[in-house]
Amino acid sequence: MPLFRSKAEDKVRAAGYDPARLPPGQYLTEKWPVLHAGDVPKVDLATWDLRVWGEVENEITLTFEELTALPATEVTSDIHCVTRWSRFDAHFKGVHWREIAKLVQPKSSAHFAIAHAEAGFTANSPLAAIEDENALIVYEADGGPLTPDHGWPVRLFVPTKYFWKSAKWLRGIELTAADKPGFWERYGYNNDADYWKEERYGF
Ligand SMILES: Nc1nc2c(c(=O)[nH]1)N[C@H]1C(S)=C(S)[C@@H](COP(=O)(O)O)O[C@H]1N2
Ligand SMILES: [Mo]
Image 1 (spheres, rainbow, N blue to C red):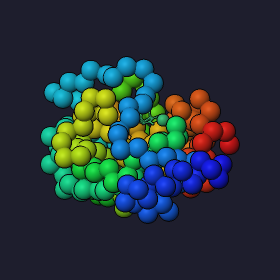
Image 2 (image 1 turned 90 degrees about the vertical axis):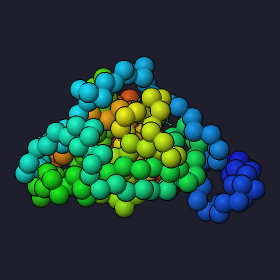
Image 3 (image 1 turned 45 degrees about the horizontal axis):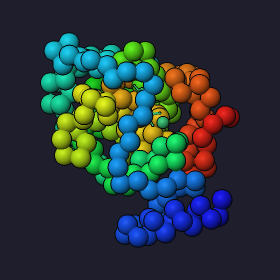
């Protein structure tokens, strides 16, 4: 799609960004679209917790207070959705995996991170993808708490993959030895989801 590509790149240039930041088949949007299956869950912070379990030495369950008391990290990174919109310089604040890893001590057999969200939603990534410098367990976006639509109180951000791997309404992270395709992956989305390779659908 050379014509689409050049128009999309022109828009990126006009917005003052380097067009090399736009993965193939994507276009830049200034908005932050809302996308998910099902309804926005009603979450009660008083009973909310985040469990980390599986191939770890110590399983943990953190309350929202305990999570937000851990050292915070701020990340500015680009979002690329499989439906072709990209949003540049999204700003997230939250807890980096390294802080969680100190508490749970992943075993050497831990190769995959399965994000578990409200209503049974799951999303799988290699553990390396959530160890990425810019990956984050997010509780603030663009300078304020997440909105319910975008995953309040806590969502995941997996910067190296299409955005469907970034589970909203996160409730747990399970470390596994073997991969376990998540909700969208079972629906036909590509398991690897590398936006530079346009791994959108199928295998
Ligand atoms: N819990 C949950 N998280 C989810 C989804 C979902 O259906 N349920 N959809 C994913 C998809 S397909 C996308 S594109 C992003 C959209 O996030 P946003 O609405 O904040 O833009 O959330 C991802 N996280
Ligand atoms: Mo999506």
